[in-house]
Image (cartoon, rainbow, N blue to C red; front, side, top):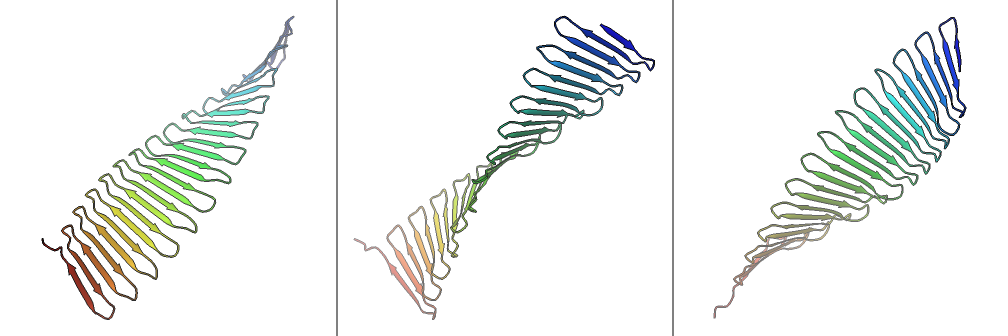
Length: 296
């Protein structure tokens, strides 16, 4: 045991033991103290306290692991751990309850997790293949998940407290898919392709469904079905005819065709066998043709 004091008030205590353990303890007149402990086959520990309330703890182990822990009376606390395989962990907490966790791994993966007492929590993960995941939650608001891949799709998924969810996927070729569901049972699907059709499909809780398709050449198709059995099909082409076809649950059907420079045709059939054909031409002429079933 060695004990030394100096006129400025510094004192040093140094103890060695037969097993190879040693302890060094230093105090200074400003209130700073340093404790350093070593063991032959175990960890080495350094602990420093300061008069402002700050403390530092540093531990190293024979396997190469090291731990650093720093605390401040009115500020953040920091924990930093490194391991021999290359993994490192950084954890920071603040007096207001916020925390940050950051982990890196030898394969290149990194994880960042941030929490705040009354605000959002954020999780962000990156991987060596270029993939990344972002997940954000809020106490009373939406949660957001966003995944990106270097050569594949990007995915965004959002949920809100009212039960609404939104899924949005984009691909490198420019295609995208949007899918929204709502708590009342309504769902919306919207698909776009860079050189092909765009498709919108909506379903409602009453059983109504709407399908709407558009193509790059300007053509469009609208198809609506209703729970009473009514269906509506409407097709348009940029330089050709437009076609409207309606069927009803009583068996009535209506077909209406218009042409840019030609006649318009209306054709109605009824469940009793009656049919009506009405044709109009651009010059103003019209033809009405009605057929009825023959009574026996």
